[in-house]
Amino acid sequence: MATPSPDSSPRRFVVVGGGPAGLTAGYKLAQAGHPPVVFEKDHTVGGISRTEQYKGFHFDMGGHRFFTKAPEVDEMWHEVLTDEFLQRPRLSRIFYKKKFFHYPLQPLNALAGLGVVQSILIGCSYVRWKLFPYKVEETFEQWVTNRFGKRLFLTFFKTYTEKVWGISCSELKAEWAAQRIKDLSLRTAVMSMFFKPKNTIKTLIEQFDYPRQGPGMMWKAVARIIGEHGGSVEMHADVVKVHRDGMHVTGVTVAQDGVETRHEGTDFISSMPIPELVKKLDPPAPDEVLTAADNLSHRDFLTVCLIVDEPDLFPDNWIYIHDDSVHVGRIQNFKNWSPDMVPDASKTSLGMEYFCNEGDELWTMDDADLVALAREEIAQIGLAKKEDVNDGCVFRVPKSYPVYDADYGDHLAVIREYVDRLENLQTIGRNGLHRYNNQDHAMLTGMYAVRNAVGGEEHDLWAVNTEQEYHEEVEGEEQTPGRNKRFVEVPVDVGLSDVLQSLDRVAFGAAAGAVCGLSLLLMTGILVAQGGPNTGATLGLLRNYLPGYEVTTPGILIGLVYGCLIGFVLGWLAALVRNGVWFLYFAIVRRRAERGFLQDLLDYI
Image (cartoon, rainbow, N blue to C red; front, side, top):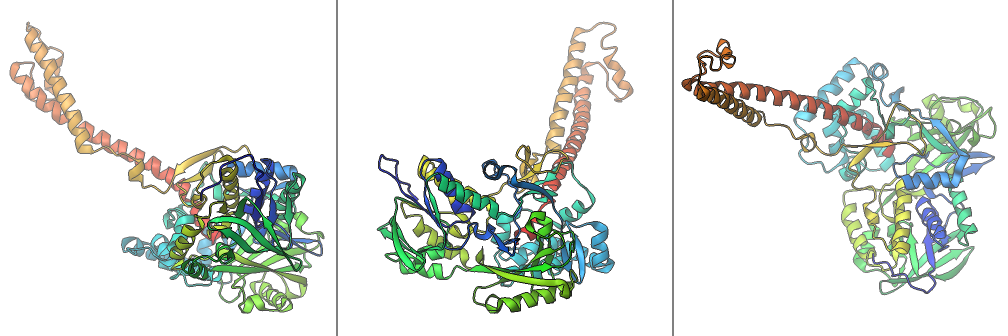
């Protein structure tokens, strides 16, 4: 979009959405001397990263680890919350076939859980699909199968992925996986079970930062700071219309407490779902844009929060449920995220996460029935006794995950082309860009939007988290998060042939042979030209190793031939050794970078 040029007239910034992206934009605007008004239609700030409360218990909607490779994001986190962060150990497992698997995989645990026969079959399936892969990777199923084999896909990925997204893995676009996770391989996953690299892969950090009372602490603090700088964050404020004059946005109509009010502005930043934005334009957008908006979809989820009369149920932060006998997809243990999330140390609070579509059977189920369902399923899994669950509540989170179905790319392109023409409006965040971003990526889009509007910069917000060419490792053996970590960038989505310029053995041998042959020819020729009774006595000793060679005129040509042959062999061998050493080195570096991607797959699903 084209941003307006700064002038002397006062600028009025309007931010739609009080999640990480919108509040970050508001925070940066306030710091820059342009305090905005932020409209949030919910009862609390934070969006998907909010923290809900019930009877003194705090519940994180999804479980949000605070780590990032973006220094400006890390700086803002600690600038806002200072010493309110805890360093938490990470532990997560997979529940599959009534058994728990450590995650990342551990050799004996995985072998014991899967069994020898199944493990062998998984290995054979991997070899089969490496030899005869899908030639075109259009779907998530094809993408995973080509990297892990069909049997491991069916074992660990199919059930959970379809629970999360609500569509078949044969419909989910491979583009989603390719965007989020690069170069997965079964070899890497298995090797990471046995070898621990010196450097720690960033996404596999065993400790992470977490606010004492959940991520909502961060966003409530940001909202307060915006107010202290002269801005405001309006709650229960639903933007129902976005007014425009041609391609220039002039204001928004906000419904709040049953009253609709129009608010004018000069600059607009929106993190509302982009299909909603298009549908709320006044005058309306063209029909083809509205049709595209109707064809973009989201996946929703709800959390059933259970309070259990047990002080210590299980050690995990969260558990992935890869079992189709229950509806729950993931279970959070909030006490293990932070003790301050639970007001009574004799109790434990759990978050039973159910992925659904707004309006479907699960979404519309009565809260009491949902609590009863969660109580039954936690007992069925074996993590708590049904009679120990003494209370519960339900929180619904609409439009949590932008869906990458078969045609989403075409529809999004139509919407983007139109929205980008709006002169003074920028879309940000997961829903504003219809991209499955993390919290830190959403924050970056908010920061860049402010730089575009206030600083005249030209950041492409759509490019954030789309071309991740590097994966980061935390340097050294310490695996603790913090602001002063140093990072090593390791290229992982380029082939070794792009990184390693191998020596051509024949060419290198020929070059070495030419040098050796000409050197021996020159030395022999010079000595022959000098003459004398002891001509070339020392060099002549070579005849003991090179039959027929003498320091004579015929010996000049014989020396050339021997020199070329010996030089060629030595050069060929040297190139072979050098290529092998460098290939091994880059293979080790690449394996270190790749080993975290198996974890990324489940974390990003």
